[in-house]
Image (cartoon, rainbow, N blue to C red; front, side):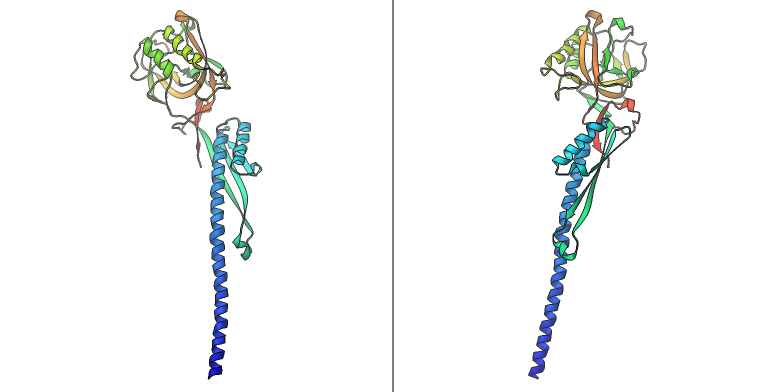
Length: 313
């Protein structure tokens, strides 16, 4: 009887060892799965964020695809991604950039189960979308007849008596009066209300020559960095946002609701010249991106002069 019990006990010990070995293997598999899955998740999140950063940075340079690609690769490298692993594509007249990046992640515990590594990828799409609303506008604008705008080209945004048109180009925003002092202050500081595409605005009568010269010259003189239209400091007072408008009644000198806002543009205030009723303002178009609400229903590139960058996928 003793021999039988001893034999049975030894057999049970052997079974326990086998069970422990199997359980340890299963436990090791779970540890490998938990640790390496966590590493994969963290690397995928990091890769996705790097792709987002590269796409957003590159989109700031659009529609210049060459500059956008260089900036995207630079930002990928700053986020620890090999820039050579980026696949970059452009679409929609170079107003959309797609970044795809791949990386091989090495496993640790899972190697014990025969798994060495796994390829992961990140993808981001950023686009330029036309801005739908703006504030801080000066009371001058660009006539729709100038479209399409060319970067660096000089445009007359306020005319004088020698230009023939009965209206000189001074815009009347909601709540704004016709006084020269108010117009000068708006020229210096911008309109504190919000203007949207589709809004109708009025015309201020007369030339407002003195307030024009004072307001524009104050802005020009406030720039101490020697800025130019293609090389200016952030917040330069010579760079302003203006509405692009459609004149609904070109033969009218004054009146409310005679201008329709069809877009916005950034301009560099080049100069104000003339005197008396001859005062005129010249500005150069500056392609620029800003933060703001956008309108993806606008598809005509001629009306996409001021854009905001956003991730679309």
